[in-house]
Length: 471
Image (cartoon, rainbow, N blue to C red):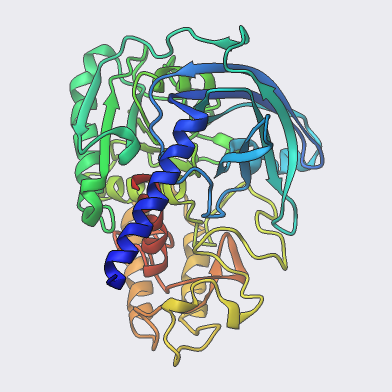
């Protein structure tokens, strides 16, 4: 038998076996498990809230076990009869970020509502949540048994009567990557604007590599979410709006960080459509957004200065890089609320940030040319001197971005003049730390406010995620 034919037969057998695994243990529905995540920086408690039966399963029926090793947390589903692991998925959470803030370090107790979505089981399953310890090993922190036939599973129809828009339809949900756009701060009279903003989001994604090259593997839907008020909350300005999703600036008291803590409301609305990944478009012009792996990304849909319309494209792709592929921030000079987000001497789980503990085992070594030294020199001293100047400026004052553009041009010229510009290496400065953490390229969509492409390592991480969900 010819080797190629043999390979096809083997792959067919594997695919059939994986399909049988899904059909054996799961139905084509979704089980949503809601819980409360409570604690401080030194202690945490997870308590079950409610399990829900929801619509069709949008995730892969083939890749049931997570092999990507991304996320601060991991949900594991075990068949209770055989104790067999039948599903797992890595993710991150608001609590996981909040516990690194000063508020959590001060032992102030807070509670966040969270969810995990898994295929709907045919029989009783054990649901286990695990969290990485300081050495990045997963340790179980919560466990419960759920009987899908019990009265404790809520079967009310989730999702409100908002209109669903199909922006891109390429196939069945479980065979494609399903993106869902939700709007917040759009009144009923602003639905026309929402539809235009959603179309722009789609256009941005489809012209950005590597999404562009994988357009046929994507489905994009939007839900016309109607809010009572226009705009979103701005606590530092004492501006409060009644919106359907509750998004707000000043999350973790960071001026430009936009999140919603109203997880249940978001999940109930999103349940109207099949989805793998959520992006929340905020009806706001002030610069701001956020993104958490496997939770959601957010971003404004307007700009205060028309000269910086391109900020919208940057926001979409940068924040979606976080929530979709688990990419880390490669910058280190902007103001953040985190303390020791990456523990010293520990290799981060993000694909594009490294502590370079062992250069010979660099996780993106296949992308590095043999002649490229590790660590890799770049114009860091000059770059940091200009960043020190920028940090003295008030971003809220008129003219900030005009001055920033001139400064940025100087930084770019210095970067382009270095020996390893455009190459993959290990460039010091990443993950909110000027020293001790390294990024793959001198500049990237995850490093600076620009429309530069994702670097090769970030692009590969995105493609890997697309493949994982679309197979």
